[in-house]
Amino acid sequence: MYWDLNSPVLQSARRVVERLREAGYEACWVGGCVRDALLGLPGSDVDVATDAPPDRVQALFPHTVPVGVSFGVVLVVEGNVRTEVATFRQDGQYLDARRPESVTFGSARQDAQRRDFTLNALFYDPIEEQVRDFVGGQADLEARVLRTVGDPRARFHEDALRLLRAVRFTARFDLTIEPATDEALREMAPRIQLVSAERIRDELVKIFTGPHPGTALRLLDACGLLSFVLPEVAAGKGVAQPPNYHPEGDVFEHTALTLEFLPERPSATLAIAALLHDIGKPPTYQVQDRIRFPLHAQEGAEMARAVCRRLKFSNAERKQIVSLVANHMRFIDVQNMRRSRLRRFVAEERFDEHLALHYADCMSSNRNLDNHAFCVEARAEFASHTPEAALPPPLLSGYDLLTRGYPEGPHLGDILRAVREAQLDDTLRTREEALDWVAKHWPLEPGEKTS
Image (cartoon, rainbow, N blue to C red; front, side, top):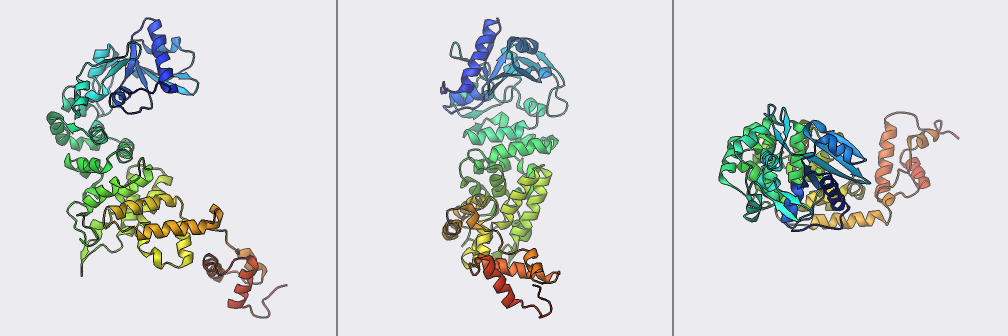
């Protein structure tokens, strides 16, 4: 069992338990922190469960935040550390597939019975250093089995998000779903449609930024959830690809492998873009001299924009995901790009994510990394030790041309774009060179020039 005893979070959570015990209450750690410790994994947050009612918790600690008093939840604040303290409870009926209509404070055993999976219903006494297990969670962890607490249909009916959580825990911890839980998961998959887009989004981000995202994608499909939460990705099943470029198989298998080749702990935007990068292939599928997907990146970008809106991603996240999908095929041309175009491409915002997606895309298909290496070298060359040198500010502005006597109009934009191209091609390096170059290529009539 692994506990980082030097962790300020752990030390603060122990002091919370000690204070509650001194006041005559039962208290212990609960949930994911106990599960992770038993698996030998480092944890982050440590939650405390107690039979002390919320008002007593608030009275016992000088700094608290009542984040969910009606559900028995209070945050105890100690310096920069916040410890969630929840009163043991029983839940009433679930009427909205999310939360109970009422709660009744109870015992540790009753609290364990209301939780989702046995591996999340374990308690730990940090004073006696003992695990308290009312539901067989330790045995399930040792056997690497995911099992609901009690009747799986009842658990999934109470909160439909547990359907996605089952997939996340199974993939993350390399578990097998026990038969009754698996049967209920497949049978009740349509209930995921009752869950809000925001909650689905957050769970998908946790799934695909966590361990074994490709396994998770296959499991989402196998249990029937994928067609409800991401039908655009499910549509890749059975869509063949040219074997010379994609020996791995169809679009769906390529997507699953792409996810596996992402860096450890990818950002949400990179993970979701990898998931969506080829959703434009099914609607653009054609067989000519070979299988082709004309303009699938552009089609996929528009589809990705719609998916991001549906799942309520922020504007900034949506912009980056769409950019990653739209640009993932540009790497094919990098070695033939004009210097100015290449310079702009490698200076794209958060280009590291573009590179990471391209790497994963290649490794999940033909494994040719020549263009990846070319872009890494090009970016290093353009950077010249400072970020500003990678994409320097323009040499000229419209004001410069106007003061030289050029009349207003659309042609000013044409001139400035040409100057910019020449600058990024390293043909022009100074403002004076740019002005002379403009005068040579766009000479003014004698009467137009001003002093």
